[in-house]
Length: 516
Image 1 (cartoon, helix red, strand yellow):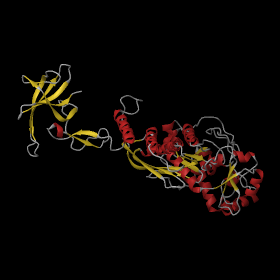
Image 2 (tube, helix red, strand yellow; image 1 turned 45 degrees about the horizontal axis):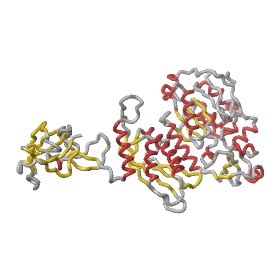
Image 3 (tube, helix red, strand yellow; image 1 turned 90 degrees about the vertical axis):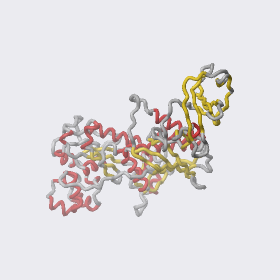
Image 4 (tube, one colour; image 1 turned 90 degrees about the horizontal axis):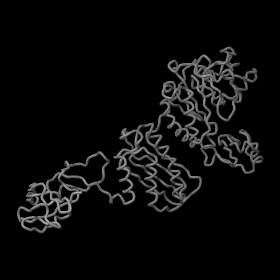
């Protein structure tokens, strides 16, 4: 047996390893630059229970594998274990020990969906990721400098999975097969040196490697219970006893044979449904479920460096058609709190026809995210984003047709120099926009108002003092609305600035607008 390596960390987690590895609490002695391949395995031993609604809690629950000919307990929670229920036990025996036991049929589709959600979040640690039936395999060698080493990266990855409500066992090894075996056998170790693989793997029990039952039985007849004892057998004789497939796995674990594992690719379209524990009319509970979906969406957007411009929300009912809402954004968004606020305004404006049993969310439209710098670090939204958020909330509360943008249009006549258009995102100019004129007031009268005149001076609560002008506007002969006007900026006795003009044909004075 080889000596204990000095680059292993103590096991962590609540569950002690079944065959403890004597490890030293020393730091990893291998430099990151020397590591060519390194795999982190995140094993989820209770995934079939965790994906069930109410899988945790104080009620004894078990998952029954329908693939078995005789129904037996495949997984059980800690409450059921304390009552004597164990995996492999018949369902009748389990019910005899725990009459209040809840039985669930295993749902592989839910497990796969949960694994893919976790994989989307794990892509922030590495782009090379492999999905196993009960684990995630991350190739992390190139990511070590970004996270401060293998130990820090492992801690961050475990924390992210645990935050999603999953129990996780993690191991790090130079080969994917070795990391998977170590994690499944609850050996939460960190091994970066490939030279130590034979000594570490040699202590693993053969019974926990997932090899066929006939292979394990043949090895037991030889008195072989540990992987190290297999390694000491002649290779030709070992191949005859365990077969070429198991021998290939052993070579892969030791780094003697290349591993071929298809990398997982994140889907290009995001859509998820979350079942509610109970049906409810309370939109507050619906928003809690929706916030969980939005957090998952934002994680997906972050990995893809994208932003969402439109969402589809579906509230499913058991006894009536689903209630469907579309949430359009004025500006691409990636903030879960902002998206939840828009959804809350939508929900407050509708009446649910029946209790909600599930919430479905779909990213209908996404675009590439663009980095927008704030005025100072830490200020959050910039001015354009705040304006966009305000307009979005107004449109939701008042209606899409109640909020418009006013944009300049090419033309010299003031009444024809602007138009009402839908509000575009901040920073994007409307089609046909004309440059703004500094001498134009923002408040124009719907129709020019005639002014009284005394001694040739227009009156507005008293004589007006003409400060600037005239500005001749003579146009419109081609469309039947011919105008000939001399415009002036004037001020009344209270200091209010007005925009007035004299009609060159009639000689009359008119008020056309007021300055702010």
